[in-house]
Image: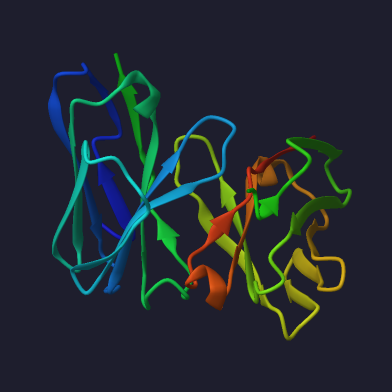
Length: 113
Length: 113
């Protein structure tokens, strides 16, 4: 595997479910990011991790809980989501923190019923 | 407050012609600009970037122009190819935004054979 991978690619969940999104980067990067892309809106930065430490939480509701066990893996734990949380969730990584070019995974298309 | 705007949601051009995608920004402290391309069911991929110390950067068929006084940048693709059909996002960063990337809404480019 090369680049940035995300699983699952598609997820349908009910509002009472708990699920997790997984991201893995094989680029040797130190920073990882979660973005949300809703229809017809710009990508919204959610969380930033640098060397496993969270450096940014962009006012994301607590029903989204990130976890970064190491520089290569990033998770987004989901619980009691709302239908308006349905979106494409993209993971990205970069060599340096924030300022460097970011490389994106394919995304997880999430639908909340 | 949308700091990066792509006012054209879609653009259609003939194969072999030039495609010009436009992007405007409001934050004069942005000093680094990027273009990403996104195919359906894939994450955005980095295309080309430009620093504010330059007004043009060229990479093969892709050229990005930056007009700092107008707070405007554009991506030129020439000659356009059907495989260029994708959504193009511009993004900007700078010290005052904590170096985080701020994305535009995207422009769907369709290159017709």
